[in-house]
Length: 84
Image (cartoon, rainbow, N blue to C red; front, top):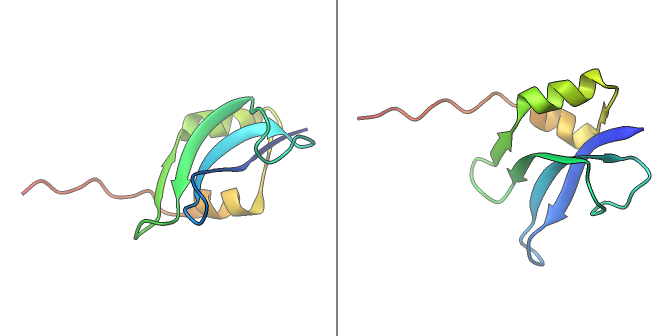
């Protein structure tokens, strides 16, 4: 079964995550099928970059979404910056 979940990268005490499609039985940082985004909780507000079309594709193929990624997907998309 495929899962869409977070894979931790970054230095100690400086977490940065990739949103990956991976086999459920693989290790947290195992070889993913595809990287579909990034998540950085250290910025204010947290920066999220997702390939929503690819996430929708994998969900249509039966991939399950982890609890945390589900919360990230529920976040409103950031508004485009206003040019002054």
